[in-house]
Image: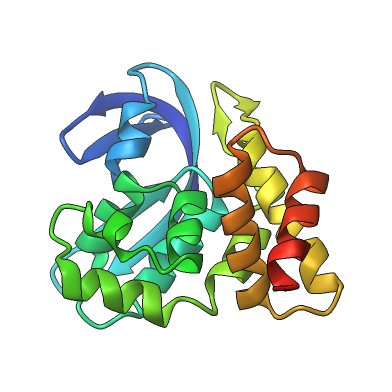
Length: 206
């Protein structure tokens, strides 16, 4: 199984890119979000999820391990296959998806092409307890572009750190994730970890 590819972007298609690894071109299916951040000729490092079937081998690429984890987790929901899972990650970043699930904001998930109201509601309901662990898991997993580690968005790190802190204080993951998501909505993307923790604790004290 292929778990990672590092090479140059040889070509970019509508839903895939060809990654040249030492002269061998790998066709990798990517989310719209990842494709938008790619440029032909640049060096990239992608985490890969390999799907083997009788008639084909398909490679799905992701900017980080946490994004691949979300891709796999989404497919545990009835009605969500690889296409819908990839489209969801193209519409929402992992942190945006975690926030939508914590707040049970199915309308945000419904913005994904191919996802209707019922499926969006099922996704946020069934993943409520899994979102916190996935958010925290992504704290120290940087992507690589042009050979350099990309810094995760500040709000993503702050949110994951705040969730981890609340869990360490004894709150269950679902409670911690919901409280921090509410705090982030109120304080904005520039909120720091300490502020998210304080606001999250006030939310949990209600």
